[in-house]
Amino acid sequence: MSPDELGRRVWELRGPLMRLACAIVRRQQDAEDAVQEALVRAWEKRDTLRDERYFDTWLMRVVINESKTLLRRRRRVLWKR
Image (cartoon, rainbow, N blue to C red; front, side, top):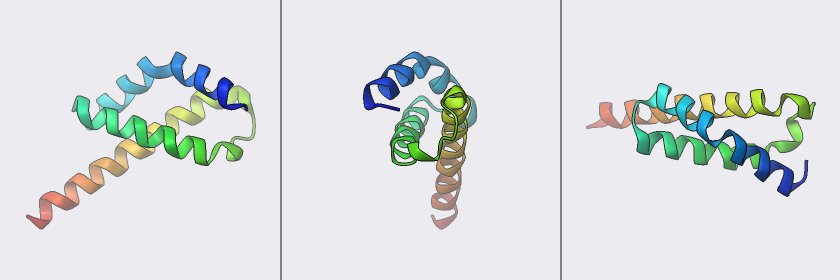
């Protein structure tokens, strides 16, 4: 997948990605952080996508994983205080 194609498809999914992250982390700013981290991770791991037909599902899963990671980090910080 070319960088232009990836950018176009991410742009089309920006709303659903944010809604998904917001549903998990419950805060707009945290959702933005989770989506941004997910996009970086997706770019780095783009060669692991076996079939481009499943790009949307794959990217949603990356956002879910990053959102959960953000929650775990937040929980760890709260326990250390």
